[in-house]
Length: 115
Image (cartoon, rainbow, N blue to C red):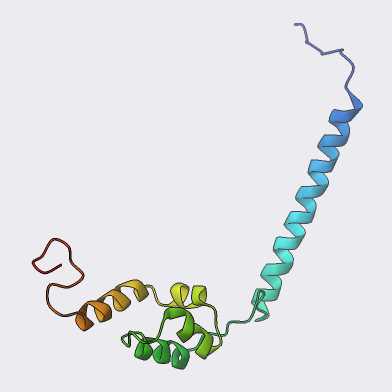
């Protein structure tokens, strides 16, 4: 029976890299455990939300009016346009439906007569 043994010298850089990777894993595990414990205590991390059902209802009520742009609706409600897009998934469809209802028949559609 013969045992094979690698007798080439180990580079110090690889030892330090392995040690750094091990320490990083300890830190990541500790962070995850801490976040899980905080969640279990009812703590919520992240930026507090400014969106509530009344705000979304107000935005949806203003969308059909073509005089209000999405930017002006967002400014009026104190949020960014991106916030409206994130929280009203069908915002583009609502806006398009409202705009098409405002156009006279045949307008805005190049494949139809009169467009």
